[in-house]
Length: 326
Image (cartoon, rainbow, N blue to C red; front, top):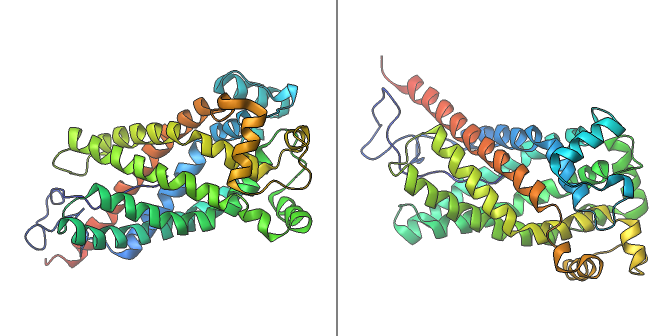
């Protein structure tokens, strides 16, 4: 979901750089704000939608007290059971609100990320690649990304749950707003940020490390972006699963789970979520759905990296060709 770029690379095939050291991924004049926003929006939408059925399974597997009819042993078994008992399209419920949120969220994320990365790299590493700059810039950009995506996540996860009472996204939004207030859409925001900040740090460091190993020249290389993104996504996803479980609990407000520990009203706050998860599932409870989360994240980040880098490459090449003298 969250990506980095702006690393030194070779010039575009068949084209000379506009100035010494300037190329496709060095960014100062080669890639515009609109290029980053367009590439980021497309990458974000594809990242969140292609693997959406697995995300639906993850949400259900993180349920702390699931209905007996919604208990699954594996991702494959869960998808098979959901389709067989609830219909072919059931794993896609809520995908429309995810698409609406992912586009602008990722566009703003990349615009902020690229600007902060360049600024921090100049300060920390005199314009060179800096793992610290990558992590800080990504974490700061997450504030914007999550501000847009958090309400979409609340609606999406409530639509994904077993026996969800909501027929449409609009009905879910209206009901939640009427019964729980506007704050319900941001009840898990602090948990989301607490999860995504370390997620970004682990993701960027792992990705950059992998790129140094398999793509040291930092050229546009789809296979290296896919492999590095997948590994980085898997490592970051596994490490932050406990926070994701807490986020899911805050988003869905499972009635059965909360009533079993004598919680009336609505659960709020990361600390309360952590305590409730421990009460209901102990230490293993924090890792519910880890398999589904990793299986979802690996191809998702691989797709996002490859799509983002391709569109950035393609759009930048197109602009350079238009400026090139004939």
